[in-house]
Image 1: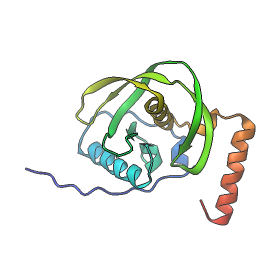
Image 2: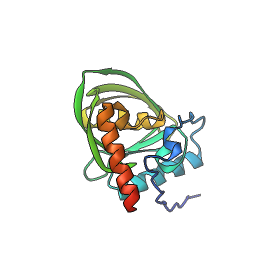
Image 3: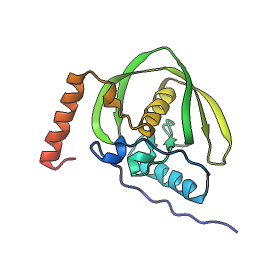
Length: 174
C-alpha cells in the first residue's frame, strides 16, 4: 500500500511562549506520528526560510529537530533525540531564530562537533559537523533543552532584545 501524505505548515511559536522554556521529552519510537511531525516541520522551516527548526518551536515538547543548510533545500536532516557528544574550539558568529524573527546576535559555539541521533528510519547515527551545520545543530538542541540563543548573551544585550520584542508586541508586530 502506498501512503499519500500532504504536508502541513505549522505555526511557529515566538519568544515568550511557555513551550519554548520546557525541556523536551525523549522520543521512544519513530512511528508514523513522529514521521509526519518531522515532515510538517520541514515544510514549516522551508516556508519560513529557516535552516533549522525544533519541535518546541511548533508547540511539541519532543526531542525532534529538522535542519537543511543547503541553499537549494535538497539536503534535509531529521534528528530524533540528538545530542552533542563532543565539541572543540570556540567561535562567535551571528545567529537568528525563527522564534525571534529578524533579531540577531553574536553567539559563541563550537565550530566542530560530533553528534549522535536517531534518523527517521530508526537508525542510530554519529556525525561530525563543522561550521554552519555545527552551529545549527547546537542551536536546535538548545531548543530541545529549553534554551534560546539570547540566553548566551550578556545581560545588557539580552535586555535590549527583550525591549525590542516588547516594542514589537505593543505595535502588534510580534
